Length: 299
Image (tube, rainbow, N blue to C red; front, top):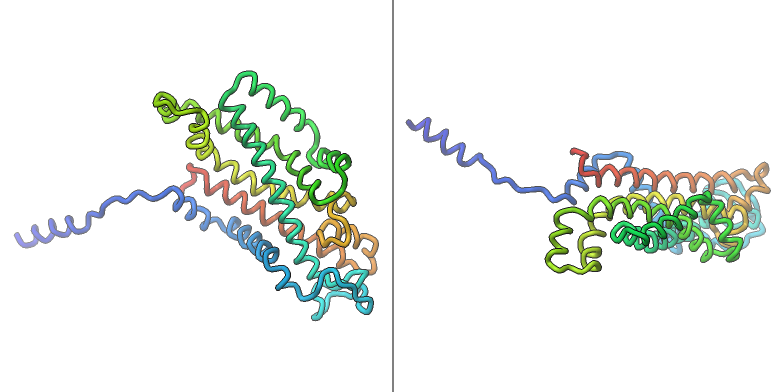
């Protein structure tokens, strides 16, 4: 009898209450278990830290000439060597992270604001408005992204602000199409119809229900588009249409080191490797976010 009572009491004690897990906590757990995503996060975090604390981290003034240290190879005093004016390459790389990240983030920010707005309007209202917006997006998509940015820069003029505008414009169609497809997939859901029946306005439904439920693919796409924006900005600066000397932009540094590729190869190889590393980091981070935000993924 005592044994039966002990078994019953143990069952009563052991039975735990079910506590549902938050979707965000599950997303974070999935993200942490993805090694590539964590590597991408570490790489991007490193360059963000370098960009924020560049004036305090860089060992030298990136604009100061030193005619006694021209084209020096990497050494303890100059880990990345010096350029044709004796400027420390490491300091210029650190300060260049500010320019590249700012171009990527601001350019993608422009794309998100305009593209998400147009995609939401096209998907939610449909009809002739959808046709007009999507045909404009199709025209923009007919041009290769880099060539479209090149044409915009040629019209507006070569400087950093125009580079951000050009990158923002050529990325708009991608965000608009992704947002439109996401909106179409949820605008006939029961909770949307219920909100309409209760008298909710279109603006309230879009802000309160539509955009929050479509934000996951936009987050993933924006992370990957930052990598594309950085690469495009470097390409434009390499052609002389982006940041202008003596700005320590990585693409401009590549262009300056091109003339000294035999005598001082570090002037080209180091900025090139840095661009590759940053683009790789953002792409790995974007892949990890895509997997973590997918509700079909299991821990």
